[in-house]
Amino acid sequence: MHQVDRVFGEKFLTAVDDFYRYGVHLLFNEWWESAPQNTIDKYVAAITEHPEHGPLAAAAWMAPDFSLAMVADCAPGTLGAAWREHMVANGLAEKLAAGYAELTADFEASGKLARLPDVMKYKVLRGYQTHDLHHVLTGYTTHPFHELALQAFQLAQMDYPYSAMTLSVIISHATLVDPWLIQPAMDAITDGWALGRRSRSIQFIDFENQIHRPLLDVQAEYRLLRDAPFVPMTPRVSELVAQELVVQEKMREGVAA
Image (cartoon, rainbow, N blue to C red; front, side, top):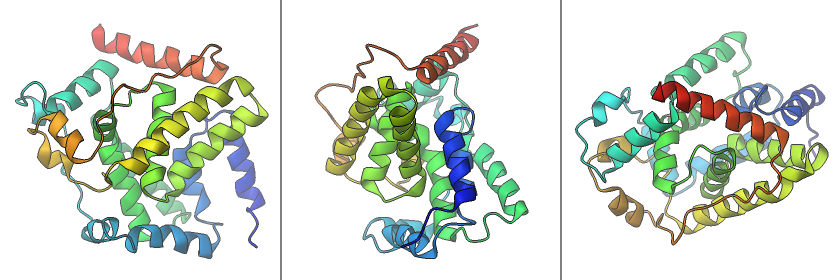
């Protein structure tokens, strides 16, 4: 049995302490240097041996830079119009993937990603490209518990260390630091997991080429329609979540100003 590398374990605990200060985007890149090869192989196989994921990952298609200007002419009710509304209303960066690619380049230059398989590098970069499209398709907002639900959704569709680390960090924080987080976090995780298991896979799909399609049609095709949206129940809001909600509100105020 392999043990968790103790140096990496300290970094994991740093993320558990405050997952907004030291995020999974850093933890994910720190892991490969000490990850057991057998574990890496299993994550790779989850992509390459899957009948849908494998061929798409082999093609390794990346969307051109996606911007608000590209969806300016999308009619109301389309996927593109919904994405535009999501981005503008929340004050989100248009080129999330480009920023993550720069972070990846820095880790590569340090040698920490020498054991990162090409297919996994593609998965994380493509995942950042589609992240906000997946928000729109699943109906999950940028609320912290909706973000957690989306990571559970992704994990339900594919064994993937980034999503698994996210859930592990949040539940560890809830268990060891803030029990007020347990129930709303588990509600989010179970909602996202259930939706991810019953829907068709949306991993690696070129939704950037479907921006003029009615959103409801795309959601119906991928079995993403639901009777009611997920509403997190938070009678007592944990300190970290409260801080993040303040940050998000400031972002929205900046857009409105």
